[in-house]
Length: 220
Length: 265
Image (cartoon, rainbow over all chains, first blue to last red; front, side):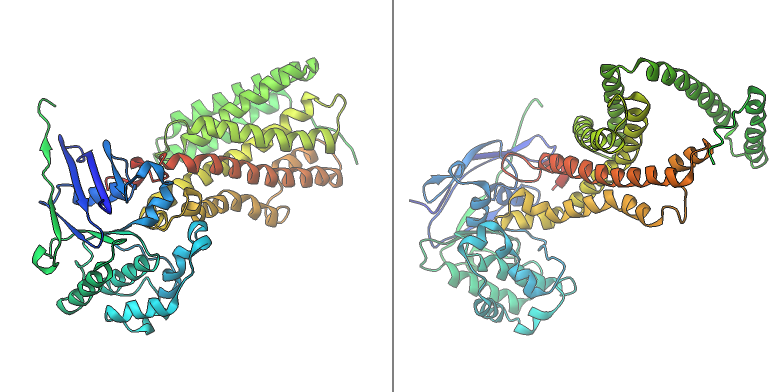
């Protein structure tokens, strides 16, 4: 059984007479690279999988269970979407990392682990001094890594990453990629769906690829 | 102390035309292009107020409860329409929610003031109820319009943050709680400020009217205190109801922001 199964998921692209139909599977411990020309709806696919938008039809299944059987907010924690433009809130980096643990849903089952946060930041080449900094003034590359740390801290099952490397230089790109590969490797209860134009499959050992091919509707 | 109203005769009223000429003179001299509007406005002011004056004499004489209720409902409907029309890019149906919010808050606060505090005979006395409800509506109309406007603009400006909160497992309420707080503050701030400066910067219209009408200022002040506090209560309640009913409409059944709010993303 696949970790995440995308079943006849379809959606329209903007105002254009184009639609996309997706059938794909993400095995446990795997990475699924979503490819396609820009404007083909790659980000939309991730947003649909996170239930931030409604699809025209079809469904996704997590560990064999349809998304309809999960409360939407529980689903969004398990199948966690990280936007291309990281949303950092007013306050310090530490406050931003703690923020998810203020929702009723997470507060009930999890606790913020600062040691783990520091270790994740360190693996992504950020010193723990950044914790005290104002989250609104750190650089784009730092923000991307802080947001990724925040996402990993809530321990999702599937991580939906939209261009996570776009703001990173070669060295940090490598560190982040290594961290992500180690995060999923050998874990049947973890997986990554990745949209990236800077990564090709060769950098992700064993990654599956899915090519989005928009279909043009005729007579509209 | 009580000298009663000094009546204004028709001749004296006609003399107030001089005041319009003054405004007209400014408009003509600077070519503001307001002469026509000024003329039309003057005619409407005279006509509307004269008509409402006679209508109120008739309504006060009837002392009919159903009539009073119908008039207040009508006032609520106009206020709701005005409040929701000025809200930019609101979603369809805001008028209905504004009406419900105004109706509930105004009836609750107005009834407390009229029946429990002022206590006229009969309790539904039109001479008391209609002006009181009118004052409440006039103020809460502005308050709820401000808060609704603020709610929409806050949510639109912060879709990235709201969606991030949703991905952390937040419910729609948790995701927009900050926006709701800002919207409530925006709606209530003018009223709270007016509580601070009343009597120092401005003498409110109602109190001024009572004093001109020959009422002892000490008595007029007591009425004004009640009015100020009732407005504060009605605005708070109205904003809370409207914002509380409106925020859910920004989310779909999955608890995600609807397309109209998040834009083209």
